[in-house]
Image (cartoon, rainbow, N blue to C red):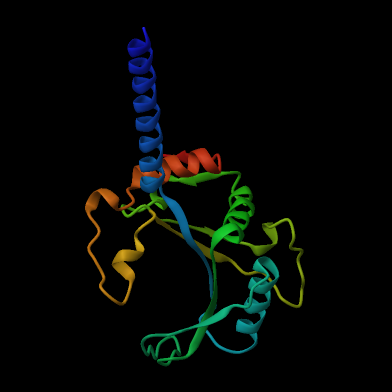
Length: 193
C-alpha cells in the first residue's frame, strides 16, 4: 500500500512540475511592451516647435527631445540637422498608463492595418485636446501626434547588446497575431477589419 501511495504522490509531483514548467515557458514567450514613442512632427523650428514641446510635456510629464531632419529639402525649406519635431519615449508602467489614456480617446478600437508583421502598433491622434487632462489653449493651438508601440519578448536584448550579440530565432520574434491577442486581452482593444 505504501508503494502505491508513493507512486501516486510521485506522479502528482511530476504533473505539478510539468504544469509549472509550461507556465514559466509561456511567460518567456509572451510579448510585452518594450516602449511607447509619442511624436509630434511640426516641420519647422521656432515658436511652433516650442508649443509642441509644451503639449508633449503636459501630456506625458516628461521633457521631450527634438527630432532633427536627415536630409535637405529646398522646396519645404528644410536643412539637414534642422529641428523639425519632438518626441518622448515611455517605458514600463508609465507607458501602460499612457496607453490606457491614448486608447480610450479612440474608444479602444484599432484598425487592422495599424499592426505590422513584426508585432508593432502605430496610430495617430488628430487633436491633443481629446485627452481628459488637456484643455484647449488659444496660445498653443491644436497639435496631432503619432503613437508607436514597440513589442518584444523577454530575452530580445541578446540581439541588441554591444558585447557578444546573438541571433534570435524566428519563433522568439513577436508576430502580428500575438500582438493582436495581447492588446485584446490586456487593454480590451477591438480590432476593426
